[in-house]
Length: 391
Ligand code: F3S
Image 1 (spheres, helix red, strand yellow):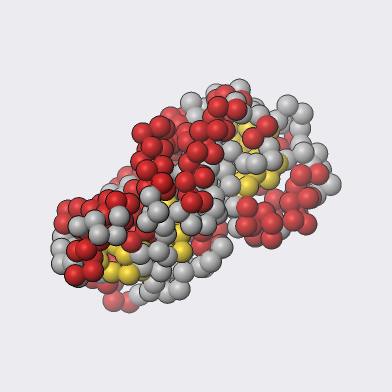
Image 2 (spheres, rainbow, N blue to C red):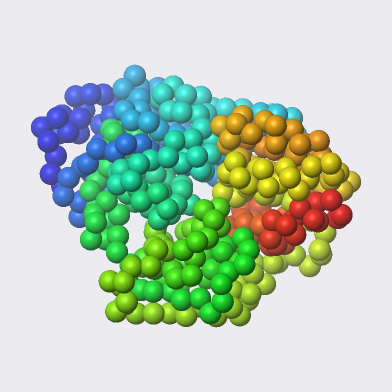
C-alpha cells in the first residue's frame, strides 16, 4: 500500500509509539485486503468497550495507547456501550467488575474520544452521504452503508481505534463504489409485518448471503427502525455490510431468491429457545432505541405498572435519554428502567439471576444464549410490552 512521506514518518515512529502502532495496524489491514492507499475519514466508531466482551489483555492494549501522549483521536470518534449504566446496574453489579470497566472508559476519555456509549452513534450525529468512516459496530456499519449511504467497512475494535488516532482508513471494500452494488435480488413472498419479522429476515439472509450485497424488494417504505432491526440481524449471522432497499431498474437481470413467509416464521421459532413463557427480563433497545422507539414504549406504558418480579430494560444512548426526558419519566413511572449506555448483551445478566430474556431484537435472540447463557423469547415490541404489564 502506498504511503505518503508523512505517513511513512508516522510508520517509522517519528510521532511516538501509539501513532506508530496504529499506523502499523492500518498498513497491515490495507496490505491484507489490497488497499492502494489510506483515505481520510470523517469519523470512527470504536467497539470493544465493555469489559465483559474485552477482558484484561485488550484492556492492557488500550491502556498502553492511552498512556502515550500521542495516543489522541485525530477525528470525531464515538464508542460502543459499556457493561453498566451509571444509575441502575452500577448499584447491582460487583465493585470489581465496575472498576475493570472504569479502567477502559478512562482510557477512551484520555484519548479524546466522545464517551457516547452507544451502538447507534448515527442518532448523535448522522454522517453525511458519501462520507468515509471507520466504524466497528456491525449493526451501525450496515445502517450507515444502507440507510445513510455513508461508506464504511466493518472494522474490528483495534482497527477502528487505529483509524480514530490516525484519522484515516485503508481504501478497500466498502470504500470503493464498485463494491457497493447489489449482486442479487431478494423477493418476499409476503410483506413483513412487525419488528421480529424484519429481524428474522436479517438472521436468515445473513446465513445465506455470507458477504454478498442484496437488493431487498418490498421493504422500501419500511420505517427506519425496522430496517435497523433487519441490518443488525443481518450482520449477526453473516459478513454482509450493506443492503439496498430502493428498487432500481438496472438490477433486474440479477439472480433472484424468494424468501417464503414460512422461512421467516421458522427463523423466529428457532430463535425462541425458552420453554417457559415467563421471562425474568424484558429487554427493548437492541440496537439502542431511537427517539421514536422511546416514545412508542412511553405511550404504551403510560399510566400502567410493570408486573412484580420482572425486570424491564429499555436501552438507549445517554444522548437520546437526555433528549427524551419527558418520555423516560413516563417509562420509569411504570417500573421499567431506561438504561443509558449499556445493553443486556454487554452486561452480566447471569450475575443478576436472569435466566430468560424476552426481546423484540433478533440480534439479541441470536447472541443471548451464548453471551448471556440465557434462554430467549423473541416477540414483537407490542407483545413484549403486553407481557411487561401482565407477566
Ligand atoms: Fe447494541 Fe447491545 Fe444490541 S451493543 S446492537 S444493544 S447487542
